[in-house]
Image (tube, rainbow, N blue to C red; front, side, top):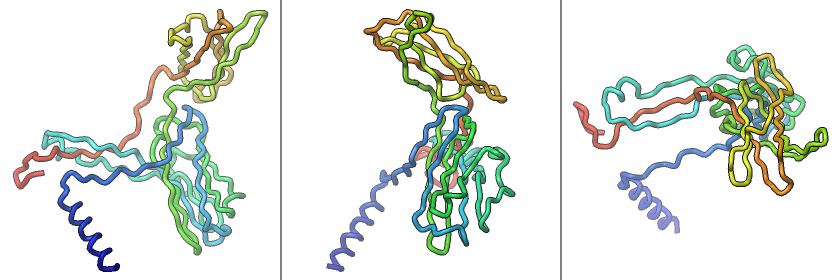
Length: 261
């Protein structure tokens, strides 16, 4: 039986070596969608943690990697790999929080409930998230009882669709929605069941505003009918540039002076 297992393994390895089109699948991460300027909760829990003595753990953030195929050899030479060091988001060791090496982008924006750490709960809360926060967040922990790593992808929600409530205000029936996210310049669209834009009959009220200019809003639609279905869509007027790390590679068969790719 052992000999048969070895033969099967060798056959499989030989097949993969001969298969030029074989590509390893890209790693999959749990995706956490958060409204812009909202708070992100990134869960992390390990069963091997037994108290905080001799426990060390940290959170890091890195850009999302994208691979681009180029035909121009000069583009390949000039920018093969744009490398960025992972940012330290949070660190805990020697039985206390350590902010000495924390990246300034996360200063006073992150929190871990230290009362839950001894139970293995290392969940991170990141406040006021924006497009530069998008990326892969890694939670790493090590103790005398074991070590572990969890990764997840944080993404900003492009467009929010809050629930619609039918209300009566001053004897007038309206449809109303309230944003969960925060927006610098909010754009609200109202649609009926036929996907027709009926936003001209709506109004917007600012409920709260942060010092950085983020606004949480409410929108009301007048002239509603009891048998109709309404949708409320909210987004920001302008998107920010997303953070990415780019790999560039040549297409197969492209020649260089000293060989072929």
